[in-house]
Image (cartoon, rainbow, N blue to C red; front, side, top):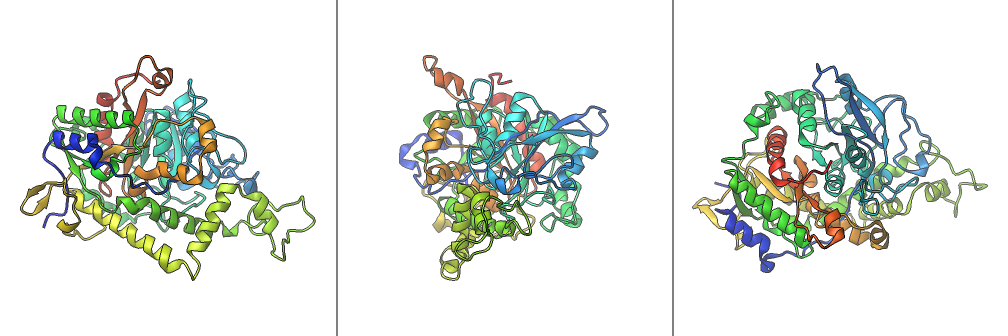
Length: 516
């Protein structure tokens, strides 16, 4: 039986985007990771041209410190390259430097670093660069690097891309090795890539065969046999050829009705609608789809991620790892060894998430929070698997329960609603906020920005943010500055090659202005 969701034409999708009656004010939290670096264009192995590579400061690279933007790791050096750094260096990349970020990747606007606040660039210095990989996005936007590495736990590559007008790609979980990456949340962390356009990322993943290389050092890296099996079920991996594999005609794009939230900025909504209309003009089909578990995804994320973070950060005590607090006579605080070290070594956001995660893992809260969040995560994965035409090669296909379907979603036939090739939604609900306003936000306000990026992370799916035009009032100076937004495309597991090709083909049709 069919297990997917969609509508028959873009007018139905337009009603979903435009109708306030269908808005879903169901954002409950928001989290984001940010940082700084640079990147724009990736050469093929035999090009002979060195590619400048910027690396987020939680990824090991010989010759550079790896501090995770935290006082507790000040001056820390790791005597080897992360696997992804080694792979790119072997392909001709030259590391230009480390990029700033939110401390341990915990933040939304690259403002929680112990060393610096990352600012947007090129006239947007007063605005957020997004997080936690804000430094990597800024480096690419400024042209300091052709390609940048970031990490994406719940949107930390895609969000900075949306705020800086760059491209941010989160691959399928397990495709790129995490060995040599300081962990935040192991089941969510993914190494991501940023560039000015899709092409350098597509060349790195497909043409330079990064998708083929497993890593025995990383237990979350997909084994070679599984990679071959997944690749055999997908198109686009034979070579990097967007003209062949990125044709939009005949593809079906789904607009999740649960993503059309009341808090969505009107200009972002109009840009989303314009992108959908462009897809239809290019021969694609745009239909509404339903992802019922989306409303609980953000809450589940902010239970799971802090719980894993609390476990990962427990080793930073100044004895085994990290800088010891030397300003006090003793590390003891109320009889607790190394309490002062952790108090002074971690910033407020990191300590907040450690406390939250420790509580949700406690015996009194485990069943009510952590276990429930894991159940929600499974439901989110099922929603995605039901809506895509392609099956998930790591999961058994399941039928769609019509009782869970929104009334606005029409049946394609007697077997159920339609299925789609890709999902289309905004990356962020707003344009970049002013840094002054960010500093006044509550943690909950900040977490809510991740509402569109977290679901794909929970499901381990590939997702990409590409810049799009949004309407501008020529009499409004701020709107003229913030003339772009981020459009997110989500694909089925291991459909990364086709996702990149389609994004490359679509980009010039949804962004007519010149950002660089």
